[in-house]
Image (cartoon, rainbow, N blue to C red; front, side, top):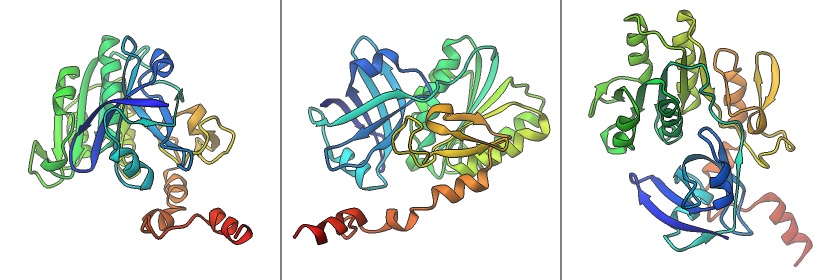
Length: 284
């Protein structure tokens, strides 16, 4: 069992938890993820590692309460425990050879962007950060981003805080002004990452995106997280999650991620797993 040692509500929908997992904390790096299971009846859900403390033996995750499993996790409190917390999985963010980077985060993806921005800063890079939110009410981790960036640009869709506009507006502005980057790292909703890559492509700037396809085992066995990059099939859990944004087939990725949208939007109290339904018929 893995004990929750800290819980903090970042906004009405987003929760930060620090989990006691010393073996995961010992090896964790920015860009990697874990897979949790609340209890023996729960599904396996991947969450990117938002931070870690090797001395305390804890790993921090930040998640949005959007489905049954994340709502169940969000209902737990400090001192409670979850059954599974597997990791670290995936390849860490690469910082070697990068001197100037722009980290672009959108919405809850900012929780994933933060440890990468911190890793670049610790590696001696000059770090620009662009983060975007729908409005002021859902802004998260502003102080943390300021602490690890040389320049922070905070954007809101409605202009209620920071600058008005999407993250791509600011990125385009910086590139057109002559700002030179060795790399742009984009983390957030798929459409946002797609358009970040489209924004940087005319400027020839290397662009990495952190993908979040459907994932089950986290070891490349199930094939659920396969994505097409440069015409080749890759598995996000073992080959990624970071890939060249100019080579990702975003149309395929969005189609695959929407396969279970109907089931995901059903009321959790009414939804009954198909396999469980069959079992109920076989075993009265």
